[in-house]
Image 1 (spheres, helix red, strand yellow):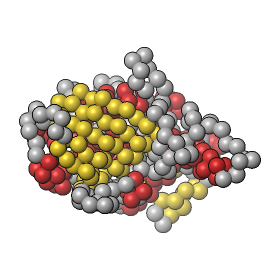
Image 2 (tube, rainbow, N blue to C red):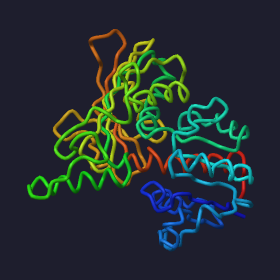
Image 3 (cartoon, rainbow, N blue to C red):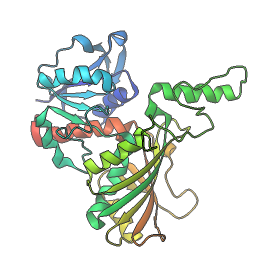
Image 4 (tube, rainbow, N blue to C red):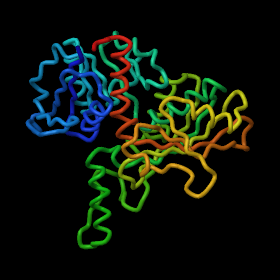
Length: 340
């Protein structure tokens, strides 16, 4: 007997990816339902070779369902996730609502699978921020070997991280550049995103950092090690899908770049593509649709005693959101629920 699974927010970018990945990875589900708001009722979405019609989230009864993958944002999640959890359905939430609550596990399965036991506290598991998820997959094996003291990261985040509206704005503004009579002022972003970069993601905080940067700091500490110091600068770039990160780490013990390369090659969820030649690295356009987090440009940082630099790229709709949620569901099933 397999699981009964609900995908909440099935008509959005992340919800559709969740359905795709459940099918691709052959998640052992006897039943999958697609849920959305009433305005999207009846919209058809793909689940492998099947076509599902969305059902009304507002009236849906989660009783008897094992897992609900939520991709609807913090506001609606606050209303519906507790209802699903109370009905006995384990919620895996992609929003930021529960990430920072101490009794709710924040999980990247390659990094802290043991934290899955914490779901019993409230029947809810949090999925991390997209930029954090890919970074910690790379940090964990290096931390296990040499203990990371400090991380300095600059992100180059695609517009799909802001949802369908972000992708539409890049597309519309790009077209308008070549048609000056069709002006497309910023709506989703603070400034023009086409042919530009914007050093702000989310709102500013009192210390001058943005909330996206704060998320990377707090989530890395919760997932990997609370003693790690993190400094982040998050930038929105005119790329449709795929987040990139330039990462600098300082470790307690010396870690040679060749050993680091070997460690990362053996680490789960990582593909190392690191040739010191033109094009011997991965860019965001090459990672779209893939499960892996790609690591390139691994090299010693000679400005500090124990320093390394590397380049990290991943499909933010997959590892940064939908894939990680499905992997959590797989971990939950294999370790705890054990059906099918």
